[in-house]
Length: 124
Image (cartoon, rainbow, N blue to C red; front, top):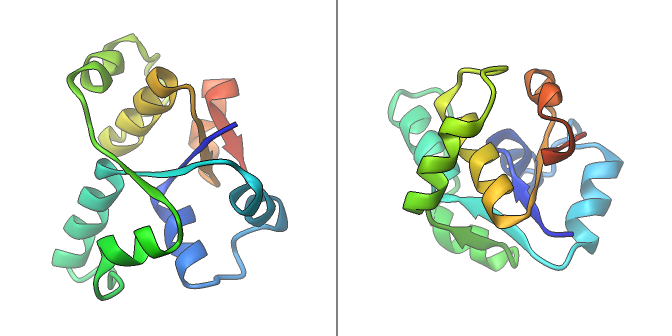
């Protein structure tokens, strides 16, 4: 099983935040491949530009140093968004769900609003 990290999960991992559960830590540590979407990078960059958070210096390199892989957004990912039910309207979360679906990944998230997407999401 390979994972795709939601934005908050990535930030919690990078900052060793206590909100990241033992379950999530174990999954991230013991999975074959962990991906960070370009959508996550985009979302965090937007929030950083608004002063809502601080991204780690050299963010892209920090992600790679963790052994995580960058996942670009493909046209197939974008098209897959249309097949998702409208349980959740956040465009960043919807593209992450589409990427998980297309790539056969599990999206790791603490966001309760994603629970209706069932097996695409691992709630932590």
